[in-house]
Figure 1 (tube, one colour):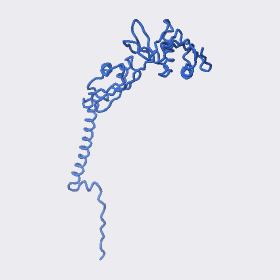
Figure 2: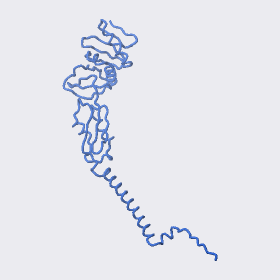
Figure 3: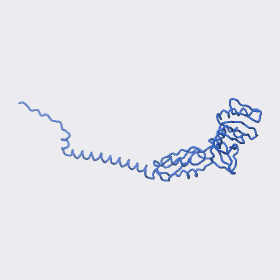
Figure 4: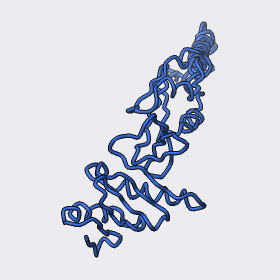
Length: 249
């Protein structure tokens, strides 16, 4: 007797779905995926809200850094006008820096956010290389020739800038400041005045009344270098207007 061999066919996914409980398991698995995705989206949305809109990461502290000689930290904070509670990611640091730069004493400034709640203002003040007097007031001058701070009396160790009035006064002041900023502190403290009737006609008058013909502000660093040795020679007038050909008489 010949037997009949039965071959089983593979069970495809549709057969599994129609088995008892098959469709329910797929339905439950699909819902679990959607629940997990929904939870992830909710967490991300909550985190975004906390960072961008909530006061959780808002401004609560201001840190002013840098060596301050003319300004106080309270003055910097007042001018900065940092909005309290503003989320750090929505803070306009450029606008804050611009307001701080409006202070005449400020040379450079950088504003940065430090999470979770601090604004850091790092600034550098201008450095005085001389001073001018006007109307009984004493104004400090930096290396660019800018008058940036008023003091009660003439500072020790800095020369007075004597600049002729007129259309070239600012250029003359800048030239005098360039000459002063090239001098080391040991020479700068020897000066009584820097006279600049013209940007190309600068003269240095020492406290012992010796005079240095400086000329223009060009090659000021070379002139300062040779002046140290030249002042050791006898004489009352020293010429460094051409640093390659100096003399004393």
